[in-house]
Amino acid sequence: MIREITLGQYYQADSLLHKLDPRTKLVGTLTFIISLFLAKNVTAYAVATVFLVLMIGLSRVPISFIVKGMRAVVMIMMITVLFNLFLTPGITAVKIWRFQITYEGIRSAAYMAIRLTYLILGSSLMTLTTTPNNLTDGMESLMKPLRVFKVPVHEIAMMMSIALRFIPILLEETDKIMKAQQARGADFESGGLIKRAKNLVPLLVPLFVSAFRRANDLAMAMEARCYHGGEGRTKMKPLIYRKRDGAAYAVLVIYLALIVTAQKLGPL
Amino acid sequence: MSIICDHVNYIYSSGTSDEIQALKDVSLQISDGEFIGLIGHTGSGKSTFVQHLNGLLKATSGHIYYNGADIYDSDFKMKDLRGKVGLVFQYPEHQLFEENVFKDVCFGPGNLGLSKSEIELRAYAALKDVGLGDDYFYVSPFDLSGGQKRRVAIAGVLAMKPEVLVLDEPTAGLDPEGRDEILGMVRRLHDENGITIILVSHSMEDVAYYADRIVVMDRGSILMNDTPKEVFKRYRELEEIGLAAPQVTYIMQRLQEKGLPVDASATTVAEAVQSVMRVFGR
Image (cartoon, rainbow over all chains, first blue to last red):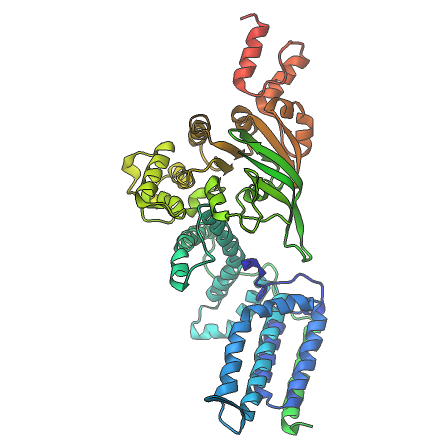
């Protein structure tokens, strides 16, 4: 049930995208997201679509696996689309009782849906092809310049990697406690909203207790191995840019140029 | 009064690339009043199997009958089954959540829709059964020692008055004294209250000492299903799947090899002592 959420998961495969430096992928994803907000016409979206399809193909992650991750966000998307559809002023296309759908509304709802879908697909492509550890290494490295402003970059990265590492552990723990309480007759599936929320107490209290216990153990284990923060700390596997990363950056620049050009040209 | 498992199969993450068949064609009958020891290597499917007995996991194929009723029938009340087959998980103390011991034990019977006085009576009786005195009733469960927490958790299941009690490694992480206390209590529940017990354990000594019948699981299927004596006679097969016979059985084997006419199938220390004494004519 809970395990079926694939958003943000890593998918093991041997592909060019998997081999890229995490920094390249982070910058790439950011570029893609920015390009989505630059794109405002059909041509630009077509360019983005081609790019995304190519990247998904390159990643060798099965489409079904990527689509499964989308299911978690369908609700949010529906709400956004509905708001856009009904609340955009303009020329009326359809009128149902007091609500009206405008041509502008249809247009902006469609664009919003595509934009959100691509946004999620693009960023989940990054997490699918990058291990959480690599991802935080990449972030730490990219944020290094911020240290000048006294931002605790290493600490932030460490917290992130611990948080990511704990997601599967806590999911498993949730599953276990849920079953243990169900064995005692607890019911998590029926009743009204308030009753359901109340029924969660026997799940949440043990979960928090266990999270604190684990955090305590982890802190102890880190101290036992002389962890003292980022100062003077080196990496066993430092990130190194390779030729393929250079090529990837080149592709990114070309892609961004194409998007801007497509935007200037307007619909063909 | 019995549980019958009929060709039960269970597949984890069915339909995806990483599907694992956790149970393969498991058929087993558990009669009223039995004390069954369930042993197997880590990952042999013991925990998966016991979760089928109270319907927490649903078999991919096969049937389970509780007192003759198919638990997968659409009109079967799963909630009643949860009350009848009590399942104590590994490290059950991690499920405690209430502000005091008594309230926590009331949670189980409270879910059965009983009257307040009945709930409290059951909680009181369960706490007495696990040997926790009144002094502990209004203490936060988080302030207790490990062994005490575990007893509270077991009481939480007992308070539902199950006919069958399944305990998944109830002694993991306890010291010898705590282990003996828990197992002694389980035996009392079996002998005095007539509860059917299924004890999942990694300790061959424990199952040899307490169980009437031992079920051995390996890679999702049942390999042996017999009395402790018969099962531990086949200790060479057990060793192949990462298990063993009780230490005392090995000693008796060696004694027999050295020419002492002892009963080599002894599985408990008491039996072994008796057999050795007999050889020396006492």
